[in-house]
Length: 99
Image (cartoon, rainbow, N blue to C red):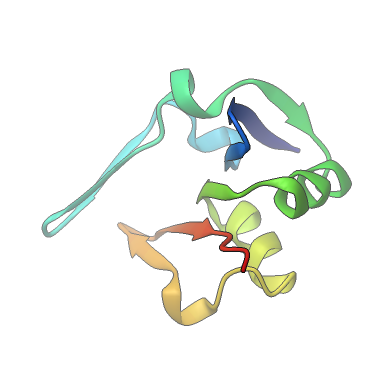
């Protein structure tokens, strides 16, 4: 299962998604701080198939956790080299730019 929340602003669709066990946690490493706020990420619990559908529909995504980020990497939406790891927790953002 994954924790997800969708936000819509005009044509833009933001997906906030994380591994649910990380909700409410904060991680620090050097100058980086990653806060997995339930108020931002927690909305629905979905299976991987639904997360994939949401990732394919969003224009912006904020992703946290090894399983959640791993799905985006496997789909080719995020390059592994672009994943930021804060205190062992993967974090990735993506932006879809259509020409």
